Each structure stands twice: as C-alpha cells, then as structure tokens.
View 1 (cartoon, rainbow, N blue to C red):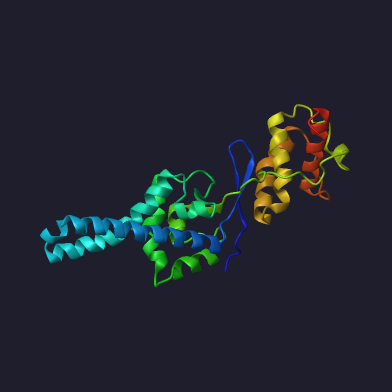
View 2: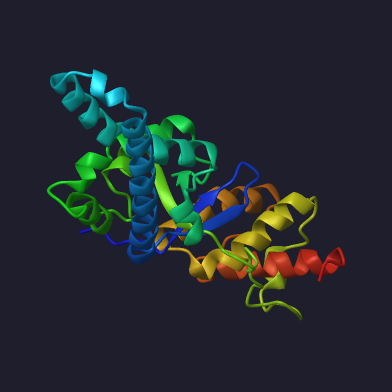
Length: 253
C-alpha cells in the first residue's frame, strides 16, 4: 500500500514551490453528498417540467425507457463536467468545503480532464458506495480515484486567509554557515526568491519532494554561483545561509 502524501508540491516554471494540501476523504464525501442533493433536485425539476408539459405522453414506452437511462447518466455527468470545467475546478459542493480539482502538476483543470474524470465516475462507484474509488484513494499517494488517475487530476483543499509561505527557521541574525557559501557574486533576486521559498516550505515537504527540490532548484543555483557543497552539511542549512546572507547584503531582511 502506498503512503498518502499530505500535500501536492509542484515546481513552477519560475522555480517557485507551491504546495496544495490534498483534500481529505471526509471533506470530499461531504462535498459529494451536497452535490448529489443538488443533482437530485435538478433531475426532479427537469422531470417535473417534462411531465407537466405532456411531452412524455407522445413517446412510446420502449424509447421512453432508453431516454430515462440516458437522463440518469447525462444529467449528473453534465452537472459535474460543466461546473468543474467552467467554474475553475469547483462545484457548489466542493466550494462549500473549499475544495478544487486541479491537474496533477498544479495547473487549473482543463475541460477535457473534467470530462475524463467524470466519465469514469461510474467505475469508481462500483460495486456501490464508491467502494472502488475509496480503495484507489487509499492506495494512491495523491488520493486519486480512478477518474483522477485517468485524467491526471487531484482534489486539493484551498487555503483561506493563510500565507502560502511561512518564515524559514533563521528569520533574523547571521546564519552559522554563511561563511561556507562564499560571496554569492552574481546572484539574482529571482534566484534568491526561489531559494527563500524552498527554505520556507522545505520542512513541510515529503522526503521525495525534498530531494527533487534540492536537485531542481538548489543544485543549479549553487553551481552557477560557485557555492561549495559539503558532505557533512545538509543542503537545507546551506540554502538558509545563502538566503540570509544575500537578504542582508541587499537589505531584504
């Protein structure tokens, strides 16, 4: 069984780390129940309208049966696809729980992905009560059901009123390893911001993502600025020292 991550951490083209908390199963279930209630109300309203109009009286029973099955499939599908595809990954139920569907790389969900993840919803429901979907979420580190796996999407929780980044452990003073990072000649403000964000978020990232961020963010910058690497000093300490030293040199602290 895989280990479920608490956050989806992605690296933007600007080399900034953005972390999205993965939606909990309880909040996803609550959001879905609210959406199902709205879907049932919508279906009832549509059925009542057609019944009152008398249109159904002129349709033969065999065709009416097929129309009924299509109705049961297309109305819920249309509800979820249109809301998620056109409402930036949310539905009324998801919005009530501050949840949003995103692509697995952190970008906004596409309409095609919204269609794909919802076309697979019947498979997730089998054999009932979303059994397959829930099992898939527990086995997947990104809490993806089958529809999410096919569409390459995730469901994340939106932070409300909280800063995306938090202060690094060394927020003031002189870092103990500043002398080890050199003079930082030629370092840019973009590189500084990338390293500061990495230092801020590093303790909260899963170990695998930590290693990826060191390889993708820290090592290229340290090579360009000729910052030595030390086998007995963790890269995070060098990152913090670099951030502190550059920030003080430029009056950013």
